[in-house]
Image 1 (spheres, one colour):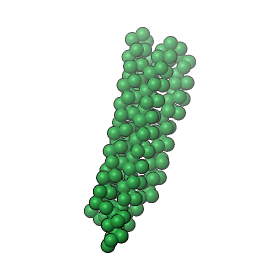
Image 2 (cartoon, helix red, strand yellow):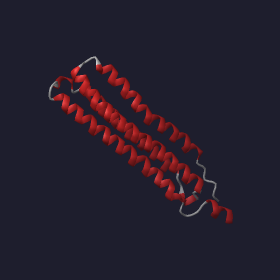
Image 3 (cartoon, helix red, strand yellow):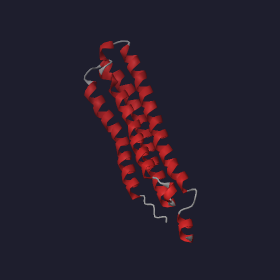
Length: 164
């Protein structure tokens, strides 16, 4: 019984819930920044060439996907938490690391999509050949968030509650 208290303190669910919050907050911040920054580029380019606006929405869509990564990770983390049955400090730290992994990589990916989307859409309005380059760079920027999601999912599978 004493060992269970040592490895399963009452404050350990805090770290798991901090992981859930980190996953949602940081990916939503990255997604919001990417959407806003890309939207600025679209409005700047759309005033001169309005027929290009629909193709120029790709960065905004890609920025929105980043928030979905955080949602998926936070739902999986919170679904594997069961503080009533006992929640180990190890699991709390794993869930925190999992949430921070997807959250911070989503923040970086959203930041990158925003900058690339803004400059890319403006250059696409000047030179239509830049569209393929824009899409390729956006894919490389988006995959940063996907890598964070993959590592987050791997970390989440390592959490075990061995409190009795």
